Image 1 (cartoon, rainbow, N blue to C red):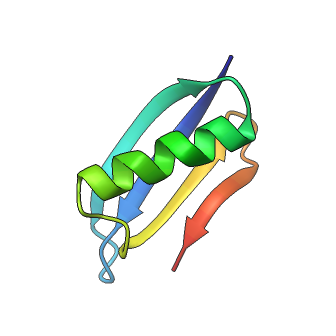
Image 2 (tube, one colour):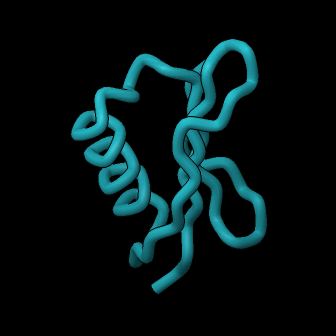
Length: 61
């Protein structure tokens, strides 16, 4: 299991969401991150999900 970080921003740079979660691999992290974005209605906002080493696994601008 690894730790992944999901962050969502407004266009003006305001941080709307900043949370971490555990996932077994990058694919699972993408699925969990996408689900969290949908649940909170942030899917169309600027967001990123990175692993503990900073590798980008999910991104939208």
